[in-house]
Length: 148
Image 1: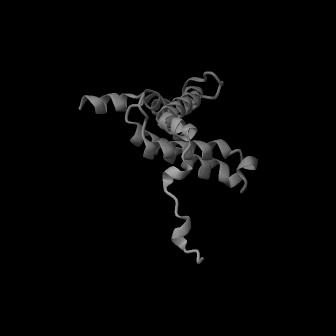
Image 2: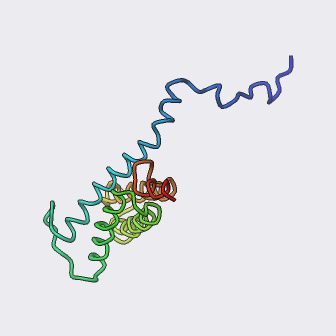
Image 3: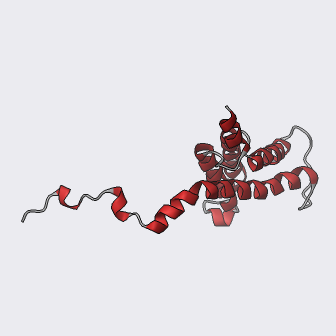
């Protein structure tokens, strides 16, 4: 018997299990959890940079590069936490993290674990994912979409 390429073609459901279906149903809610946790963690950066809480960082002068970074971190995280304007805000925050990495961390060395930039890279890609995936079902964006 000659085997052809079509012999082993399986439907996508052939590999689905009941557990995989349950996980698939929960994925929008885990997207919401990712958005909220990332926003809460990022909110600390903005609060620390602009108000010295919870970490006592020196407050930058108004309208400097560090001040704008703190403003993006504070306001962006607040909007992301609420799930309001998630896609454009997350894209802006992803860009800020890419900019921060190349401006501050990359000049200190190639490897992120050595230059201290691994968190910046991770934030960059989490925010980039949120820019494409959206806020999830528990958000003001989703509530707004239902009303229109």
